[in-house]
Image (cartoon, rainbow over all chains, first blue to last red; front, side):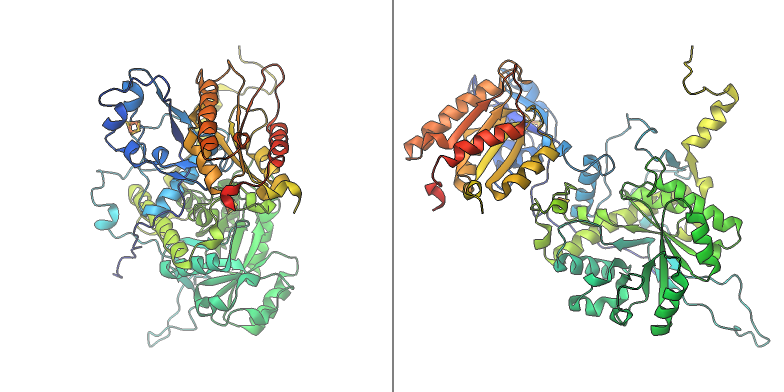
Length: 465
Length: 137
Ligand code: SF4
Ligand code: SF4
């Protein structure tokens, strides 16, 4: 059995004070000057360590406070209040919500799985939800040392065409050649996000992170400079169909990606003529006609297809349809046409939490791309100021490559551990086996139909009496 | 560089000021560039002299606080407390020889609600009447 793939994480401090969800408002006026002020009784000594980050006027008190409300409740004049922080609510959008951003920051800082309180009081479906739950029926006991400590669960995946069968000749040697594949230790490829205050140092840091993780980083060809020369093996250049000179593809690159065009065959031929053993992934938008495009690529011999959804985890042409449904459609089309094992399906678009990796794979992806989380790992607030030419509040472009790499390794380390926990809870020991395993998930629409369909339908515009 | 950009205004504003969301804030930064630094607060009463002094010390020529109208503070008297703190801070800067106008305050009106952008314009006009702060020279 090969040795276990472990991602070694260690705490990497923030460069800026994080934006806290709530803040303390303490009035001075009317203070009774008690012999022992409630502020002195804070068990976390929050009030003793006050500091203000003058760049953003963020109070250290707000970040250190553990929300026990002791001081709020015990001040006899009720001079201490807690309030929601408007800066917190202003971060991100409906998909990249403030709680998701903060969870990504914490994972990138500590490399640890986020832990939240017991119980979940919120809704399970509706706008903003993927309405999909993974089956955790194999959980038999709480994990003490983390499931990775005692079980062998492989997260490795292959990219490329796997042979349907092997042929041996009379002397028991293999006949013909086994097609080569790219094998990565976890089903995650990093991808440069479409916006951000990104400098050559940021890109170098991401590439160093990808190398430490043993995976790849997808980035536009024009972003590959001499600083990345020795990292060709972990790069996945995104090449324009005819725009970029093929001669610029790093010599040691194993894989490149091109966008879908009707003339994809000619483009692939040109590239293969230059570097014959190069893997070529073709990117198709998650939109009308994607199944047919995927099918034509698979039939035409393309072994890696990238299905790209929007950064909000929706279809590119319909923001009411969820990424998971797009992956299922293409996966099932390839299954129906008996061609699924000849293709590696990569999926991207708004994957924001570790569980999204497992869910995308259950829906039929082999591997996923992670883009904005690797920017948020660098303290990005998803404010999109950079898209307007405004200054970045966390000066991402000034971060050193070493810091960037360690934050990304922490984040992916935490996601990897969560993937293993989820797989263990599902009774799946190999990420390759998880692909398309919808029996390990429940979908709200299916359950809703099963439970209520027999009761009839409510016509649109009619009111229930 | 326009004349507006030669001074830096630190503008603290209560989250209840009309049209003061993240988009409006970014629009203002696009308009005034580095000449404005915006800080939204849950309640103007949260501000203490230290916040105003720190801004003057680190980067600002002028500091302004925009509060919600009197009588509508969600924390009942945050805006009244902010007023006292402004007075206290003005006394501190006067004692070191700075003009008291370097700390300004605008109290919103219940009858005639004014947007953050309009408040910012008014505050910027008053900022430009003052010379650059000697603290940074
Ligand atoms: S709420 Fe609790 S943790 Fe926070 S400052 Fe008050 S006593 Fe300390
Ligand atoms: S923090 Fe804002 S400005 Fe900086 S990279 Fe992120 S979205 Fe862009």
